[in-house]
Image (cartoon, rainbow, N blue to C red; front, side):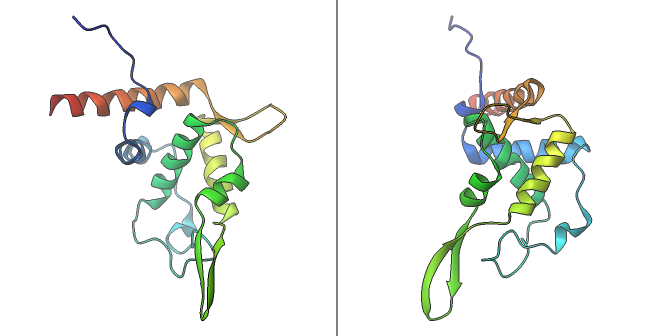
Length: 150
């Protein structure tokens, strides 16, 4: 008989977890979409708003997963992580950061529903609460159980 090993977010693939956790955030009805979600660009290097209607929940799930793996990340680091190449016509492309206000709004919304809290260390940033981490581990366990049944 194999020993029971608890499952955490690191045990499942990022794509599967972000898809499942964003569906959980959407069905939970605690995280409310702002009115401007269908017209906002995610960075100055983008030309249009995202096509996916649930992109806000996907971005929130990606932020939570990053904070699970490395607590204490701030808005500036997330701007760099979600950044991309800016097309400048005939000039060479350069890296451009994503929108800081968007990341800030998502983090503040996640703080309001009790998933994130501010980090009190010298470095600052945000970290997951105990309940937020527990929810993420439960969802990761469900994903792993589904994969083992296949």
